[in-house]
Image 1 (cartoon, rainbow, N blue to C red):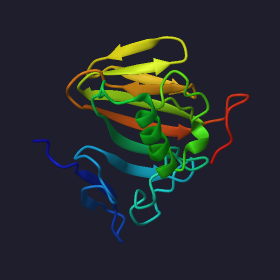
Image 2 (cartoon, rainbow, N blue to C red):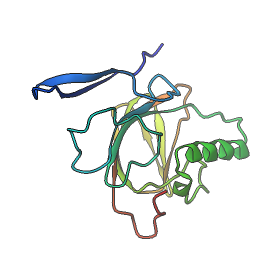
Image 3 (cartoon, one colour):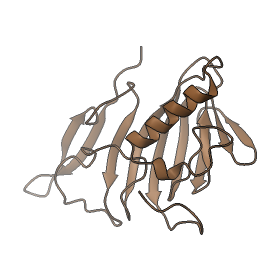
Image 4 (cartoon, helix red, strand yellow):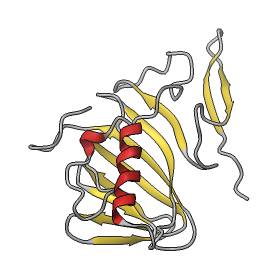
Length: 182
């Protein structure tokens, strides 16, 4: 059984000394022991003096304009028996829940395809997953890294085990013709 996600967030006390300010799971609803936003910044450079839990906010696919987000996410195994219409319904609901319906610009290849106004650094931690692109796909194994630069993409898991990934998303200038931020 996977252990729950633990965050250790540092800060400063009144004397300016380094301390632990948060030690525990990320806030909000967690759909899997290894899924959730770890930290979110509203601007670059980030304000390290701002108190509170920066991840305690509604979950969004894209980071705030000018900001970043760090998260873990899980790609569950595909169900080959699931009808395409049901897969489309599930994908549409998930993107809507993250305020990201505008990111689904071309889902002809797969309902999970999406485009964000970000540069993403993504590391596969465990399992196997396939990165789908408009043209082609790449099978990933643990510790493979993807630098995702605002392209239309999707993640599929054709194995029987969940795939766990870590991702840092940083706001970026839009590609000409890209969807407006939601």
